[in-house]
Length: 133
Image 1 (cartoon, helix red, strand yellow):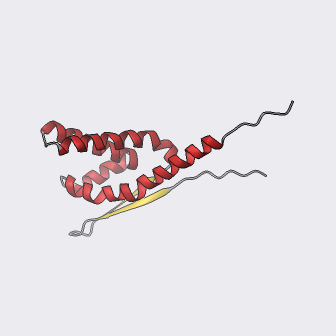
Image 2: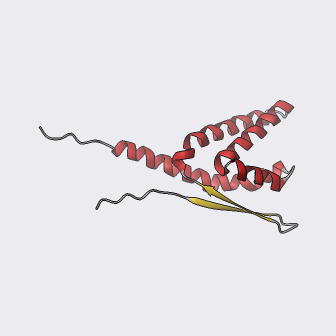
Image 3: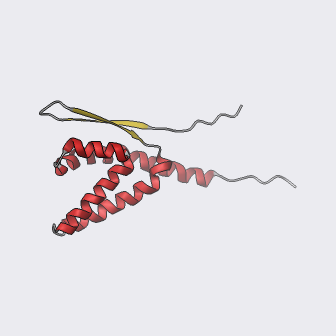
């Protein structure tokens, strides 16, 4: 029997408030085929917004950066869990970014990159053989 196994990766992100001990655990479904395109677009929008904000903070640039961050979080965590994360941090957006971006860079982005390379290799290897005539 020819057997096929589907890859499904779930990572957990645990956030703890050092002052109160309150914890939030987010289950991150990294089914990359489903989020790859949206992740790439959201990451690009975040980078663009961050670079614009680095030119000087204006109300419009801060708003665009906030939208880009929230959109990236929604792609990675899903709408409900992204909202839980924002609620957990309250108005501490800088702290939230400082805490969550390393998780994105160290866990999410490498899995996205691995999947992207795997997908490209599979496309390259996918050659349908013609029957002999």
